[in-house]
Image (tube, one colour):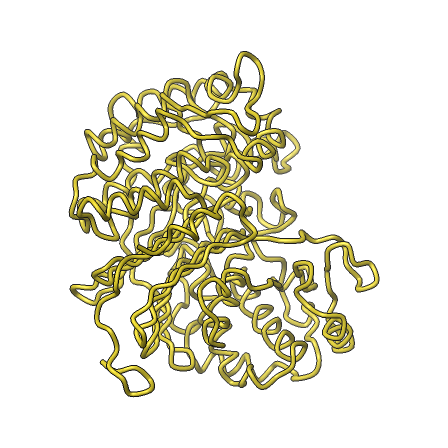
Length: 559
C-alpha cells in the first residue's frame, strides 16, 4: 500500500490511541491493552467504565452501537445493542384517559425504560473478538464503581435538573443521597451495588445480567414502580450483528451505522450530495448554505423512511445511491435557501443529547467506534433496588403517538411506532473514514445533531485538519423542521450571517437577537476521535474541548 504521494504507507499503527469523555475510561482502555488485550477488549473496559463515571449519559441500563474493524480479516462489523420495547409497551399504554400522550410516563420511571442492550454487547465483544476474559476487561469498571470517583460539575448539575424525578424511587435515593443530601461536586461517588452487578456480569456473562439475581432484582424494581417487565423478555434480549453502510466520498471510504441508526443513511445522502461541489473553493456562507441544504433533505427522508429494519421496510439501496443523491442535488439552488415547507412532510424525530462516544485504534490496526446512551439526563431516573443500574428512558425515542411531539417538541410516525421487541430509531453514528494515507475513527453524542456533527467532522478531515482540530470544529445544524439553522456561538462570522440571511436562511444563534437568534445552546456535543496518519506513521487523538471532564483523555490518548 502506498500513500497519495507515492511513499509506502505504514501497515500497522506505531501504538494505540483512545479518545473518550472521561480520563478514567481512557485509562481503563489502556490498562487492558497493556495487559495483552486488543481494541475490542479495550472497548469493553472503556464502555463499562463510562457506564460507571458518566451515569448522566450512559450505563449498563441503556444501549449502544459499536462499529468494529478487524485488522486480521479486513472486515467491518456493526454490533447493534439498542434497547427493545417490552411486550407491555404498546402505543395505547402511553396515552392518558383523554387519549393524549402521557409525557410523564414516556420519559420518567418504569414505563419509559426499554430492555437494556449494553451488557449483552459487552459479553458479545469479549467472546467474539476479545483476547482476554470478560472478567479482566470489566475489572477496571468494577474497581472504579467500588472505590469511587469525584463527582464533577456536569454530573451534579444534571442531578439537580432531574432530582424531582429521581427521588421518587427508593433505589435511586439510596445511590444519590448522602444522609438526605444530594450528591455535590467534589463528593466521592461510590456505587457498591453497581460494582456487585458488574461482578455478576463478569462472572457469569449474559446470564449474570439477563437471568438470575440481577434479572430478578431488575424485574422486581420495575414492576414495583408500576412497569411490566417479565423474565422471558429480559432473558430473550439479543444483540444484532448488522452490515455497516459503506460508500465513497472524494477518495475516502466511509463506513458507518446502518438502521436502526438513522445516521449512516443520512451521512450517505448528505456527503454524496456535497461531492458535486469543491467546498474548499467556496466562502464560508456559500459552503454552509450547501451543507445546510444537504442536511435539510437528508433529515426529511429520515422522518418518513427509517425505523427498525426488523419491523419496517427501508429503501436503503435507493437512499444511499449516488443517483438518488444526484437527484436531490439538482433541487438545490446554489444561492437560495429551499423553504422546508416546499419539501412536503412533517417534523423529524429527535433524541436527547445525553449520550457518550469513544474511539479506539490499537497497535494491530483494529478499530472501535462506540456510541452508547440512556437517552435523557440520568435516563428514566429509576434504579431498581439492589442493582445500582440506572435504567434508560429510550421509549421516548419511539413515535408513541403519531404526529405528537415528544419531550423535545418533535414528532415521529408509523415506521418508528413501538411494538414488542422493536428497537427505537437512533441518531447514534459511530463512523470510520479511510483514505490512501489516513484512517480516522469518530463519533459524538448530541441527539439529532449527532449526524450533522459527524458530517462536519468528516468534512474537516477532508479539508486536512488533524484530530484535535476536528474535535474542536464549530458546529451548525439543520434538521428540515423547524426551518432554521442552529449554530454554536461563533460558528459564523458576521459577514457569513448576513450572506446566509440574504439567501433566505433563518438562523437560530445563541444570544444574538440582531442575527435573528432564538437562543439555541451555545455549544453542543462531546466529539471523540482518533486518527492514524500512515504517511508519517503518526497517531493523533482529539477529545472535545467543550468537555472539561475529558481533558485528561487528550493527554493520555496515544501510547
